[in-house]
Length: 450
Image (cartoon, rainbow, N blue to C red):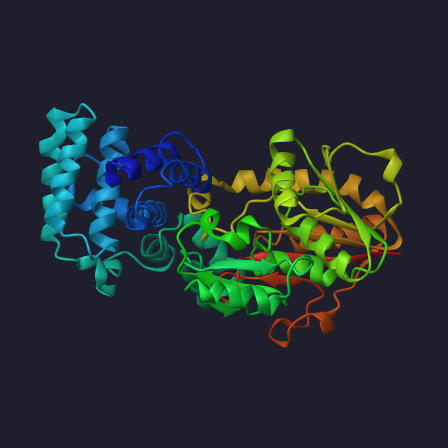
């Protein structure tokens, strides 16, 4: 990696100014730089993720010290300043002088010689703030309270802060906002059809990785201290899959039995379908049909299925909005993890907070309703529909689940005995919240067809 800041700039520009997704751009570029030192790749990852996660806070600081507002700056200069302030605020190991010097060099290398003085001046003004952002008083200035405080303090759009407060109350809303920050640990699921759990953990520990038992799901472990997944032999051999605990609970709560037919209608990248396939293998057999809307998406499922050597999965390109007459009333379990606003997984995809709009949520609710009107028909009488989303918006979650029951003849049947005690509640659905629970924000409704 010739220049770590140039690499970070390249990624951030694609995400912030061209609308690409951070996890895709970051993984693609880091794969291209696989031979670069681990230290350099870690620096780039940290810088990119911190800049995206804290963008609103960073912009607030920049607007305090710059005569030109952030939204009026040239995109290249805006990106350079954002990543530079990110280093000052969230990467203590980088001297401020080095940040300023490298930012000026980067501006010149991008053809903005004439604005290099502006870049230097703005960053020197940030240096003069002497880390004011580390103190709570910085976020409690005159007039900054309630939703405005939450927005700047936790770098979240005001409308989302307002929604969290009105829906969950201020105390829980602040936990959600804190929990929507980055978590450096990766959650993995042991592929027990290939290796015993204790044997996998033993192998990972021998390589010096940190491995800790998960909180909720049976086969979940937290993995950290590794370089890249591609360099872990056990990953390449298909002995484990990266999957959040909240997602693992879908197949665990389904209550799969020998010879069940499972249809996953929006499957990519295949985590739930492949988990279901693993559980069916353990209980004596069964078949999974994993579908998604395009070859680009189903290729992701194929890649994971091949690596995990999941032989009982059939992968098909199929739009969930189009009825398949051949499968009406055939499925023992239908997994409907449908497109959603994704505001439960902002810790993994921080740019979601800046892209999603209230009107987008309304449109997604309608799309979910349309898909559910089709896919519920695949469930046989007495069968199970697992409806899930990675959001914490009640319209997309419990209101949709209640409508399924009222319109299509399903009843909620969350098997609480399968849940860890700490997740059991009075509710007939499972709503997980970032910051409140040790996993992604996620919703699960287990519904039985009458």
